[in-house]
Length: 244
Image 1 (tube, rainbow, N blue to C red):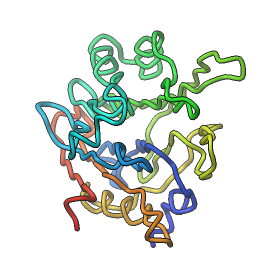
Image 2 (cartoon, rainbow, N blue to C red):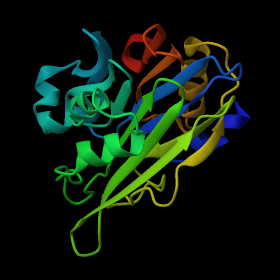
Image 3 (tube, helix red, strand yellow):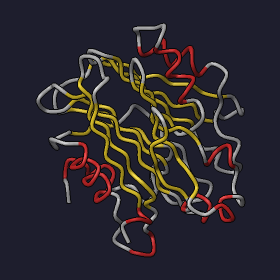
């Protein structure tokens, strides 16, 4: 097991996962998006490339229709002047804001002002989002349901450091109902892998449960992009249903 991803291994059910960081040689910006799901509709999905984005798409239309399509099908990672990532349809809004801003926190603040947590009672899944800009500036965000029902927004901006990343998940990791939201600042993680494929495999392995019946893994996508412009990138996708 990869000890540098132990924080993932320790979570029974993280929900959706975003990691943003910098490769150990300081040459590649790193973005990871991973999906775990408990319900049949959540499991009936895969990550696939469409145009300039990695999309969450159905593998079984009939099963997927049992869920909310607006929450289950979306662009998860989008490429442009920078890279945008999220667990919902806000991804494209973030990418458009990158065109006009060179401050990653401002990008997310301007993009997410009209968005709230997901309306999936009783969990009210938080919206997690992130962006990375050319040169190595990044930000992560979470919008969770507050005690009064308000949308509580938190933003975490930083300058990327070699071999280091930050991790945020939708849920805290405890498998109870309703699922508790992630709280606090994004968690630090090490990025030791040299390629997108290696890190994708490491994340996928870190999410493997001890109990096979609790294997909630759905898919992992990992991007290694040249940090100067983020225009040239290596992308690796793992879909659980295609590995069987």
